[in-house]
Image (cartoon, rainbow, N blue to C red; front, top):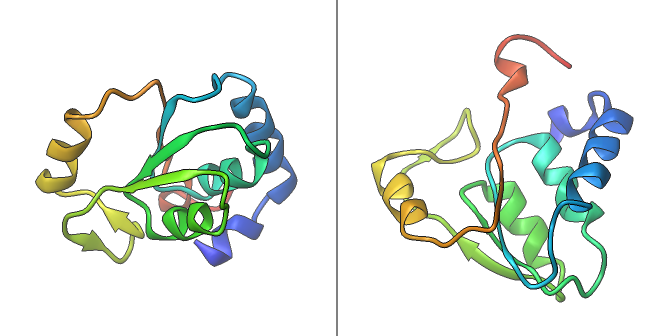
Length: 114
């Protein structure tokens, strides 16, 4: 994730800023694994009153550094290549949530750098 966040950073930040315009205050947001989704954490305005759920370790750490956001970490078996939990336990946990907005990871690095 650390390497991927720097690839086409400007484009990722533009996408992140566009994404946050679709998020309503006080809602539950799910951020899947992905460097663009990591950029969303930085783009969320202060005091947005959001709860962010994620299966991504780096995204969870970024949310924790934001004292104005609440965090739900989706657990399970962590996949080192993906950088988060993507097993049946994680899927079951997410299926029980009342998520307002979801941003799925595109896994662009699996087919080449953006």
